[in-house]
Image 1 (spheres, rainbow, N blue to C red):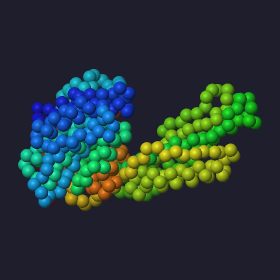
Image 2: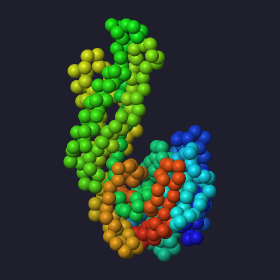
Image 3: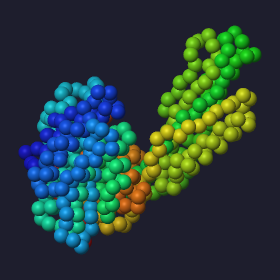
Image 4: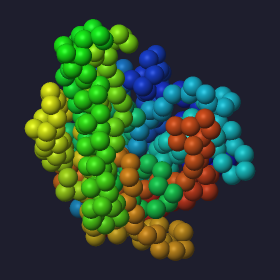
Length: 379
């Protein structure tokens, strides 16, 4: 078993279910302690960030000789829940070139690859600093990477989420909103007194669908296409014999570079204003929930060029750039003007009943990240 696969197996064996997703989940304390010890044994300076008690992140730094650029690898330690998982989710199993277990590809494979890559690059020597951020809470609120982004200013960041060994230079963001539609409670036999908030919500849902169609027909942006919107949840009413006094629609808008939570809110308020003007007794309010910006394409920045060169050398072919629809912590660094990208190994089963990482890709990923660090930090 190679060094990186051995490390991956040890990481998978540690339960790190996010307690904000699953009440009572183990969290990151135990795995963060393991990671901190691993780096300390290899001569890294280790700092623990814990903005929320019991939810630690670890940042390990190998100081360079001076005169080079600093690079941060970033990956999350938390995993989603294990309800319905087939077999023991925390007993790593190797079969047919795959390592199975909860968190194997999402994203302990990327974490193992970046840890080993950083240790190898440190041993060979770099002019610039190499930092490795193993963070908490990406699966819920990105508490860990937010704290890291507030404190550290590397020259570039690579997030090692699984990308199938493809350099990802841009991805979508998201913005979630609650739309509260007001009705008027009354006995079900008194339509003269009641206003059906659920029926009024139907007008909004029709308008939301039309909004989504307009987005789909838009030009969009390179590598990502257009943004999108969907209704995620709806609830209202209290019993069958009453007119519902309120109904709430929760929606999510996937955004592309050039779109922000503010522009999305403006669109939604325009829709609500139109309904208020045309639908009798339509009254609604809007509350913004969690919003994250897209990852802006750093284009031909030195970090992208360095990784592309390293990937082509290891894989024997050019690695075409891509965009992805899901959000990653890379955007938190991009928001602060730090060139950031996403690159990681291959696998399947994210958040599902069976999860695995492709072993050959994990080993190749470690090699590519090592070569990227040596090139970028010595450049």
